[in-house]
Length: 234
Image (cartoon, rainbow, N blue to C red; front, side, top):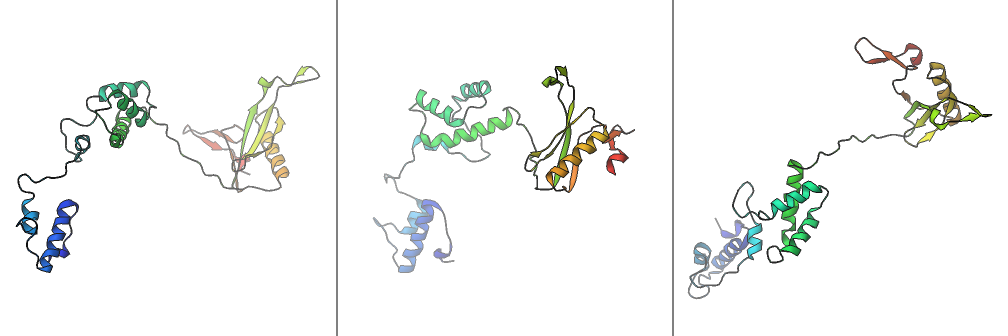
């Protein structure tokens, strides 16, 4: 198979491609009496200078799934772990800046990504539990939601006399448009009156209406759950 149909990555790949080009051109000898193919197959001769990677960069490299001694940040990780336990909100960049200030000869800026991965791994295994929530998507004109609000704590008075009351409070969740009517109990009549007043004021009717487990709309079932009242569904 011709060399120019096979591709390799890295320095060896460059040498392989050069070998293919030299072969096609009939150039078998390169440098001090060595062919390009010899260079590819055998590497540099004794005493030949080869570019070296920085020590910190070599420490930072590793193959996935392979455990080895001298893992980056192994020496300082116990201290970093204590700091994360005390303040889980600490970012890896903040910890890395601390390490660079404490040990400027031990780490290089290019190792930040390694520490970020290490901190991310710690958060997944030992970090605080994350709050799980499911976003609700509201659509215009889709729903009206109604609830009753007790207003005793407002201490409303009329002519100096206490006025204990509730509010039947319909709201459109998409736009937060709202309306309220005064009532004295969570009765079906109060619910009907409040929703009707809101619809008349709005001038439109939503696709459906939602309410909580108010006795005006629901009742206990033998299964322990709650079902809608027949009068509410009419």
